[in-house]
Image 1 (cartoon, rainbow, N blue to C red):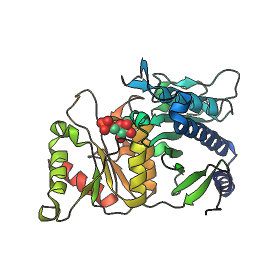
Image 2: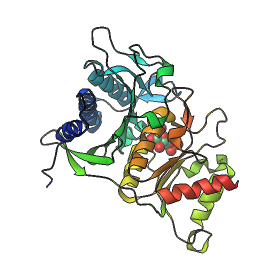
Image 3: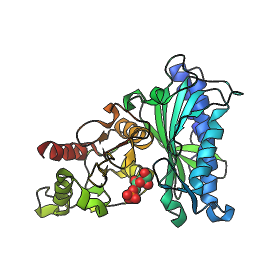
Amino acid sequence: MHKGETLTQFIIEEQRRTHGSGDFSGLLADIETACKRISAAVNKGDLIGALGALETENVQGETQKKLDIISNDMMVEAMQWSGHLAGMASEELEDPIQIPEKYPKGKYLALFDPLDGSSNTDVNISVGTIFSILHAPKGVTTPEVKDFLQPGTEQVCAGYALYGPSTMFVYTTGHGVNGFTLDQDIGEFVLTHPNMTVPEDTGEFAINTSNSRHWVAATKQYIDDCLAGETGPRGRNFNMRWVASMVAEIHRILNRGGIFLYPRDNKNPDMAGRLRLMYEANPMAMIMEQAGGAASTGTGRIMDVEPTEIHQRVGVVMGSKNEVAKVEEYYAAK
Ligand code: F6P
């Protein structure tokens, strides 16, 4: 039984250590509240009629689930009132979200994917919320798209909530990665996974192999060599997993190592991969690097990509450091 530090306590202690103003702590507390609300909605599912799709599509042209909208609203409502944010951007909405006039404005920008992997909600498989915090450029109180277009290296904080058998909250402010489990009895996240570290080597990969005919040669060669097992060029057997829920995938890798790939492919030449740089790739890259792993596009560090569009996509290869370096070698050789 963990009677450890609560997330609230942890955030306030971090504020004391860094002599913070309390603004950032307040923002994190708002996100925590939103994640608890989303967790409750995901957990109740059909009991509150929250499952199933809407008739609408999001900016990415994907069918929206009821829970996508419910979660998006919960994130906005939890963060807009408290005066910590200059603005927000959501994967679900085309334009940045402005803070209503009646509320004070703050110095941070929040970007989020309110319910990642939401195609899994109807079949009761883990989903999650991903968030990224940036500084608003000085003096900006009505942020435009250009104000959000900062590389991942500028992130002040990145984190996710995982709605699985347990609800977890995992985040980094650039000083390691810590994981908290929601104790439903007391309604608090409790520190259960201090200082999460990704093993440097792995024998487990995660990729959607139904896309293999669209892969570039380097991806195909890498996966073929993994599949060849101990008698192949890699000289070891590999295991494979695919949950189709990035948060679940990254959480597994943070706990036991592995590599996750959603690489750029030739399926849709207009799209540089499937995952979104600002809402998925950058925050997960910061977490992965802070936990001792690596995050690459295949040809360079994800967090160094200079964003040009708020909803832009990017090829993603992240996880155990030495395996990510291996994939980069395959890309460099082709
Ligand atoms: O971007 C949403 C997402 O659901 C990710 O969480 C996940 O990794 C990926 O898409 C799954 O894609 P696919 O349906 O192609 O397996």
